[in-house]
Amino acid sequence: MKMIDIDIAVVGGGCAGMSAALSAYGHGIKNIVIFERNSYLGGVLKQCIHNGFGIHKFREDLTGTQYAARLINDIVKTDICIKTETIVLDISEDKEIVAVSSKEGMTGYRSKSIILATGCRERSRGELMIPGSRPAGVVTAGVAQRYMNIEGYLVGKKIFILGSGDIGLIMARQFVLEGAEVVAIAELMPFSGGLARNIAQCAEDF
Image (cartoon, rainbow, N blue to C red; front, top):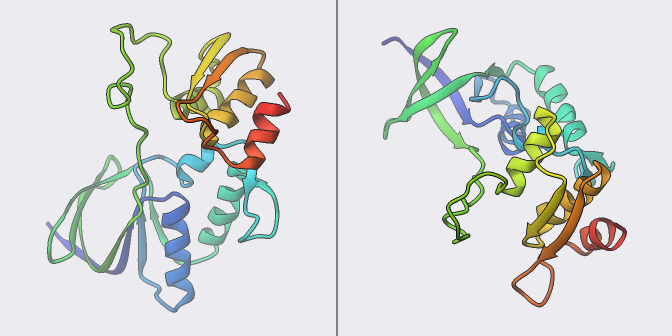
C-alpha cells in the first residue's frame, strides 16, 4: 500500500479537531489532513441548535450549528485537506495510519504528528444501570437530540428525564418547545448538575 507523507493527521472533524487543525495551520504547518467518519464536519455541534457557543472565541452568542459553520468556513479558507466519510482503521507506533473510504478505498499515511479528536460517547442504559428489558422509548439525551434536530423525529409526547445535567436541561426545554410534556426531571443529587444559566433558562422558565 502506498504511503502518503503528511505533517499532521487530525482524527475527528468536530470542534476540537477543526480547532487543532486551524491552530497548527496558523503556526505555519501546511500539510494537514482531517479524517472524519461522517459526511460533514462539525461533530456533535451539528445537532446542537441551542445557543451558548462562541462567546469566548468569536465574542458572540451562537448556536452549535452556527459555531460549527464559523469553524468550517475558517477551514475551507486554508489548504487543510478534509477527508470526510473516512474511517481510520489503524495507527502504528511509527505514526503510520491506515484509513478507508468508499471513494478512495484503503489509503496509507505517514504522519509526523497525530492528533486524536474523536470525541466521546454517552454511557449506555446498561452502564447507567437502568433496569428493564424493554428498549422502546428509552433513549439517551444525545440520541433524542439527534433524532429531533437532525432526523426530524420527536421521541415521545410524554417525557421523563433522568439526570439534570446541561444536556438534560437543554432537552427538557426543547421537548416543551416541540409540544411534548415533560413530566419530571429526576436528579440523584440534592442539586442540579447543570450550569446556573441552563437551570434558569431551561428548567425554571419552562
